[in-house]
Figure 1 (cartoon, rainbow, N blue to C red):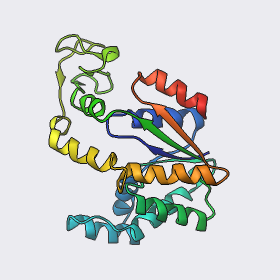
Figure 2: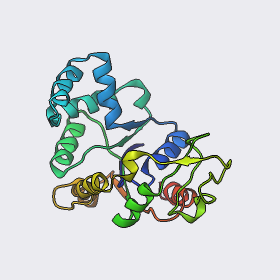
Figure 3: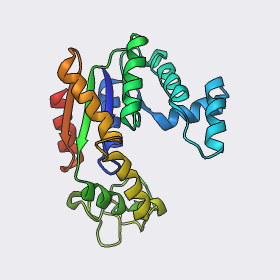
Length: 224
């Protein structure tokens, strides 16, 4: 199963991706990790990408997409892959679709997690990290994992916040790109939604991101 995954920051997309990775034994590939891997290995594409990154510029699609294709054609992807974090706009969606077809790689399923923008923002700003174990789930805006006052709900340890979780302006900027249905990330998701309506072999799945992790995971697995 080759899967493309969409969802705003705060929707639990990373958590659901990890669940799918474990259940179906396929790699969860994040676009950011592809950049880091190519740069650390000093590949030709990684070297070119680093030049743009060092200047503070966006890496052009003609560098990004070949890196993604190379990753999707590695041995651990023989039985499927889950791509997360790309495309981020409609033009990238079109180019990725063309590149996948040219490389003979099928896209089987597109997943979109639906979540109200304000709820997504609150989930990010409500995250609290346990000083004893960052994997202990605590969020002041989610009843199921609400901490015990200012203490971890799991172990009673002290809680802290990440600076970027509390940067409302930065969150608004990221969400502004994601929720843009004309040129942003949702526009790219809708490109594949339209594709699924006209081409055989592609299935477009939407999930309600508002319930808890287990409920969302159960809905996801049932629709797969």
